[in-house]
Length: 130
Image (tube, rainbow, N blue to C red):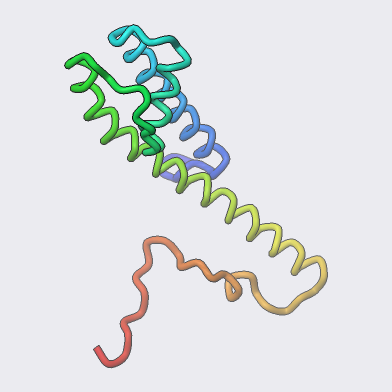
C-alpha cells in the first residue's frame, strides 16, 4: 500500500485530528498570551478558522496579533481542505449506496454514467467552437 493515498475514512480521521490540533493549539496560545478563559480561547480560535469572526473577542497584545496572521492563513486552508475531504467521504458513501441498490434491484444504468460530479485530476474535453 506504499505510495497510495489512504482510504477515505482514514483521511477523515486524520483531517479531523489535524483540525482539532490546530484549534487547540490556537486556543492554548490565546489562553496563555491574552489571559482569556479556555472557553473564550476556543471560541475565538473556532470563530477565526471558520471565518465567522463576530468581533466580540479580539486580541489586544501584539504577540497575539502577530500569531493570528499565520494562524488564519494556514488554519483556514486546513479547514477548507477538511471540509473537502469530509464532502468527498459523504459523496463516496452515497455513490456506493446507489451502486449497491442498482445491483440489488437489477437496474441497467451504470452508476458512473449517473455521476454528475466530474472526476478529479482529469481535464474536461475542449468545447467546440473555441
